[in-house]
Image 1 (cartoon, rainbow, N blue to C red):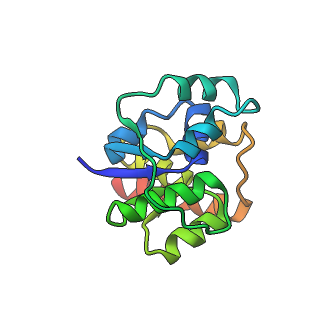
Image 2: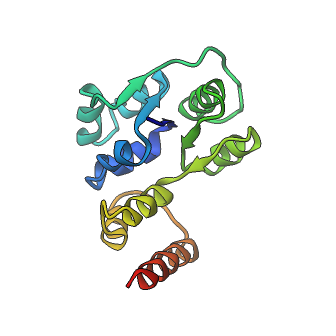
Length: 162
């Protein structure tokens, strides 16, 4: 079974759109540092997300990193990157642009929410376009050109399979 480390935002948005269940089917076990759980439990967090964070599924494991990298990004991102490095450069789930750059500079494989949805669609676990429509009803931000590029790639993949 593989292991991936997650930051807050992919978990938050996958919970909000009702697709959190794709993570163990794509990645196996998901490790999250304590700062991520704190962020998911913040008073301003949507109630459905906070409820999920209070009753974690068995495929989630909370694990603190042994070191603090002080990367100048958020606590969840910093702890997630540190933990991924400690786990022999495990893949990391993260969306924040600065955190993506920091993770890649450490040699970590990075998957954002869109990549997760794409992988889930490729495995027949969800419909990418329907998931994107739900995602756009949240506070998730994506540049239109990036969204169109992703939609075109997914459509091309589906056309090749037809």
